[in-house]
Amino acid sequence: MTSIPDLSGRVALVTGASRGIGYHLAKQLAAAGAHVIAVARTVGGLEELDDEIKAAGGSATLVPLDLTDMAGIDRLGGSIHQRWGKLDILVANAGVLGVIAPIGHVEAKVFDKVMAVNVTGTWRLIRSVDPLLRLSDAGRAIVISSGAAHSARAFWAPYAASKAAVEALARSWADETKNMALRVNIVDPGATRTAMRAQAMPGENPDTLPTPADVAASILRLASPSLTDTGRIWNVRKGGWTDYRQPE
Ligand code: NDP
Image (cartoon, rainbow, N blue to C red):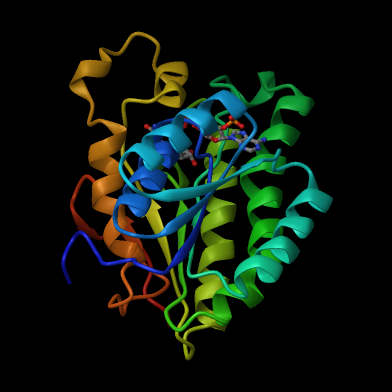
């Protein structure tokens, strides 16, 4: 499998495409030939992405959408079906950190927001596009998680819980679809030079971290029509799979 797959004629949906890892994944998917449906709330970031994609000869559709808008997510699936009749690639990347604080100091509204975006929004999106991915001859779903889902990390409770939940969703989905063309995998990007990382670790020198473009380049292979793995975790830092639990 080459690391830059040929995605000509493929339709890819990327959430959290206005900045960070999602922005660069969207750009690289478009450069590999996919038409990118770019989702986020910040229109300016989406427009910047669109300009870059077009300048490189690619194409995108911008969808300003808040992933706590359940009806909006449902409508998105319907619109994609009407326009393209299928979806080939889903990158469920959008996420929020919430707050880094002792568990007893986390405000209820912050906890609820992290769960709403990272877990409920991701589930609802999966529900909306699962039938469309099944219509593709090589549906590929890439769910962006975090090492926090597995490592005990003081003060990261809401985010860690949300990422553990999203991995459980992805694993169940992968098992449901294991006999189909659809492949569902999880990504642990590792510390990456983005706004979220700066929020989590304000004292850190960002120049010591991999760029979101580098991280996106590692993830791109999971969109390849030739990929056979499913239900696994791609560890970007390692450049390989990390399987914490094997099926019994
Ligand atoms: P950024 O904060 O840079 O980007 C987050 C993206 O999510 C933005 O495009 C943002 O768009 C979007 N988003 C947030 N809330 C919503 C919402 N309610 N509705 C729609 N879109 C939303 O984060 P990163 O690029 O760093 O993170 C990307 C993914 O990688 C996340 O899932 C994160 O948990 C994960 N990750 C990141 C690591 C890192 O070190 N950076 C490490 C491990 C995992 P907008 O605000 O425009 O809506």
